[in-house]
Image (cartoon, rainbow, N blue to C red):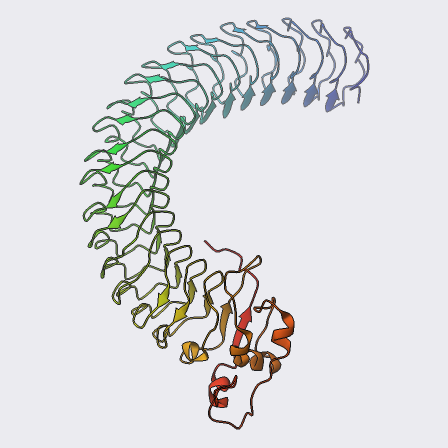
Length: 563
């Protein structure tokens, strides 16, 4: 271990007699020159660390005799030019790192003898142009790292000889245009990273020759338009990242050749219109991400051809109406997110063909009315989020047919009364969230159809009292949340809640926070004679009724959100 000393010169022969040495650490010294044959005699050396020195030139023959070397680290030095023949003799080298140097020129033949190199990193250097034949000889390379270079131009056949390369990282560069034929010769390339590279234009044929590509990352560039033909030849591509560009227009048949594409990322762009047939050809696509655009118009058949789609994210756009036929053909869709749009209404039959849908997110819109039957067809829906809209009433048949819904969120709306039949059809509902509305009354029988209910959340409404009759026909045990962590808008009349006090005394009610403004009011309540059958105008209730609600849990703390 010779690292972190003040060694400035390596003289030939100074390491003689160390024939059994396997690893040599010379990093963090002051070495500026390594003369030829400095490592003579190290016939078993596997790993050589020369990082964090001041080496500016790699001389021909400096690695002579290191035929067993497999790993060479030259990071954090001052090299600017890699000359031909400098790595002569390293026929077993598999890992080479030259990060954080000043390399701007790679001469032809510099790596011609590194036939077994698998991992090569030139990250954080000064390369502005990749020249033809720069990487000739690297026949078995597995990963080539070129990120964080100021590369602005890639000559055709720059990657000639890398027929076996599966992974190329070219992100965080200054490439503005991807010219036709840029990646010729990379027939085995599976993963290509080009994000954050200032790309504003892609010529037709730019990706020609990528016969094995699986993932293409073009996010966080400056691409304004996707023209037809730019993805020609990418028949094996499964994942395409185009998020965080400036895309405002997508040409007809742009994606028509991507027959294997499984996931398409187009979020955080400037798309305003989804035109008819824009996604034609994507028959195998399962995930489409369009959130954070400015989409206000979705043409009929815009989503046509997406017969395998499982996930569609359209949240944070400007869509005003969900129209019948908008989602026609999405028979396999399972998750639909249209939250945080400008939706004011949903037409009937909008979801008719979406029988596989199990999660529907409509929160943070401006919906005021839900027509009867608006959710027709969603027989497998399990999760429905309608919070933070402007809903003031619900028809008796609003949720008719939602036989699988287990969670319904109606928080932050304008509801004032719960009436009979409002939740008809929700036979599988377990969690009902109604907090932060203006509810002051729940009519008897309003919840009777909820045969599977286990949790009702009612905090921050306008209640003063709550009748046990509301819950008498509900299954047990039942969890109620009647107050939140902070100031609650419910102003409970403690004298009317003796039935809850009775349950607390019997250990069947658990109050984590008092629901009355004054604990003394609650503690002073006395339940009437258990033998009485009438309330007699006082605070008591029939003992038989209390017995039926004896398993209600009163939870005063706010529930962890599951939304």
